[in-house]
Amino acid sequence: MSTLTRKPLVSGNWKMHHTHLDAIAFVQKFAFSLTVEDHRRTEVSLHPPFTALRSVQTVLDADRIPVALGAQDVHWEDKGAYTGEISALMLAKLNVTYVIVGHSERRQHFGETDETVSKKVRAVLAAGMIPIVCVGEGEAERDAGATESLVVGQLRAALAGVAPEAVAKVVVAYEPIWAIGTGKAATPDDAQSVAAALRESVAVDHGTGSGNSIRIQYGGSVTADNLGEMLGLPDVDGALVGGASLDAEVFAGLVTGLRG
Ligand code: PEP
Image 1 (cartoon, rainbow, N blue to C red):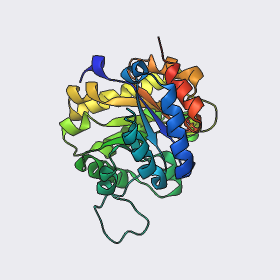
Image 2: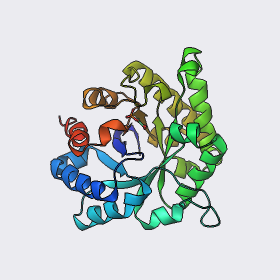
Image 3: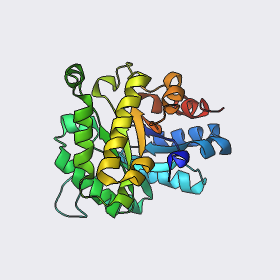
Image 4: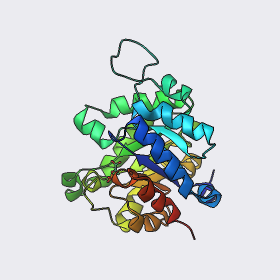
């Protein structure tokens, strides 16, 4: 893959929203709004809660909808006495393609660390899926001018020891914590300069091929109003969307809004 072939990936992270019944209705309505051309231009992934994965998979398969199935988290072990956890093998069996790893809400509320993120990245890749590795700074770190060193450090830790061919497939989501759910997105200039720094660090650590291939999403208060501009940035290859992915019509509007 090169810069020319980095297809934008727009991912809807539903967090703890939607029952499996809501999810089925969402997918049917969402899919109806998108054309073959939309799918050709933009790859879309949906990340429902674990309880709705099987239902969403069934609808996507039955109706041959070219939308990728995604999960919001994973455990790094294949199996074992880890009450409440879900393994990468279990997700892979459901035809999950993308797994969000290290979302700031998991780092903040559930004790996720750079070390557990790294284990999860390896488990996801080993099971043949693609991690969406989330990195991002808080407001205080931004004000202290520490954004780039912090996010590059998070990414370095997440990808340490991963083979370059595998790194090339990884998706990174740059999500400033202060922008998540606040209605206050990063400026395109800031998103571009952080994305460029992340890409450069991958090139240095894992080779220019991986640096060129890795897709970098921006996340944090993405709407139909700012998505087009973000995707026009040279180093931003998609978006991780929370609030604006919860309603089928609104989320479809983000994708159809990218039509030329
Ligand atoms: C997110 O949590 O990943 C996110 C980007 O949320 P929102 O779009 O609501 O800011």
